[in-house]
Length: 345
Image (cartoon, rainbow, N blue to C red; front, side, top):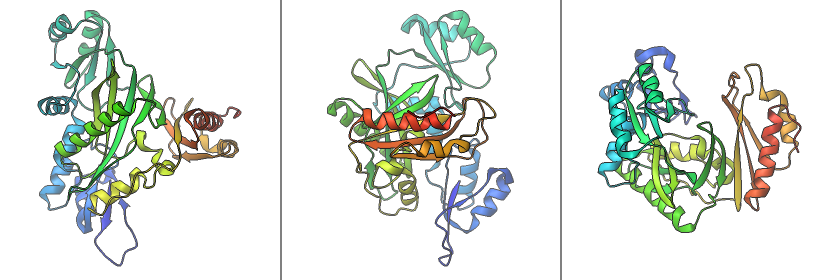
């Protein structure tokens, strides 16, 4: 959670407010700031509402945060607005899944309505037995969707300030493995018409949710058509490349947007960029031990998060700019490999 102090004598632009102080601690810390925002989807939606009830300005607002945190509410709102979403249905029992499969066929994707990320809360079901096993051991609300034949996955970062100014970042391809983003390719290697459509959809959604801040819109390409996957109303992994690649990073534009300051340009600084996530290989691995090896790769921009290593946890990322995706990708992958203890090459 970030906040800007109201005391003009302070040099702080943003301050972290920890969650572990409980609601009372958050309310107390938020009492002397202009605006409160979030660096992650709020686990408890009552927190932003309590802040608003106490007279604190919260951006993005509750509607945007609720839609980002609740996939069912998100799907319904986007469908009702005429935006392209996959077929879906809320499912609470095996017969619900069977009914959906009778119309759309197997296999299906079962998604937890809230709480899932990096592949968590998403399960592929090839038939009734698999679906029944998922629901039998699950809690909360779930939805079913067809398992679409994906050609690629795209993402668009968009920033909007309360007064209405909006900027869109270049459309990227998000390369996924096991439900986790492993690489981001900038610009997405798709036809200009498809990229323009993706950017237009992101802009429509930003207006629909009355966005104040930065939002990631994740998209599928199926049969050369765009289908919306999900939203994240915060800075996002698919925008980390903007630190080096764009005139104004997603982080700076998020702060500008929530403060209702003029937004910065999003123009690219190079013809291409590739961002590679660094994922821990085991619980003992610390990429900080290999930063010198990663920095030996020319043009590699290395970011290590200081997180405690845990297998399959994102612990850093590397971005490289270049004349094309092949060049940038080769160097970014070499530096990321070095952070896992491999010899860059």
